[in-house]
Image (cartoon, rainbow, N blue to C red):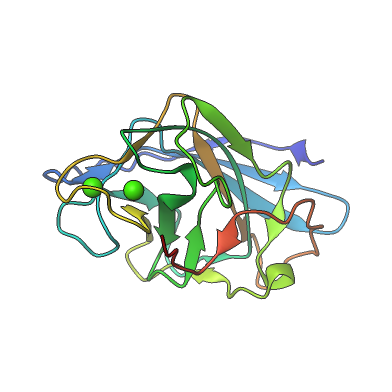
Length: 194
Ligand SMILES: [Ca+2]
Ligand SMILES: [Ca+2]
């Protein structure tokens, strides 16, 4: 739980050609009983999971979160529909350089329609043995939507539906307070074999 202070609206206005897409995130400073942090809500609704990681066919979202930010925790609440024979566990999202990969439908080895996956709270990356997500000097966090198993090259395997959000947490100062890990699911850096 945290108490909202003054909301700050950020206006990230860069517009790039497909498949590079941009969003205008909202940034909300917050504070809990252990320290202060920023919660940045990333709306990924409508993004498509197309081919394997690194494919030029993939969609990449850029969210402005501030230069040199150090993301230490994330939270997700997403809705996924797969297409054809693709499985829920194949739809993945990488953060920054790709060191951290989120697969919300982890272990759901079957197609889904409008399936909801939630972290049920804040997940601290270090608690999961993962590195913090570092943002570069331009201040943009890049998310690549990709498939750990590509069913059909160049074709969409899954779609993140309306109401899909990922919240990233950054410190307001260099030593963030400890946040509790309320869930352990879906955060992996892995590939699947069929
Ligand atoms: Ca595909
Ligand atoms: Ca697939």
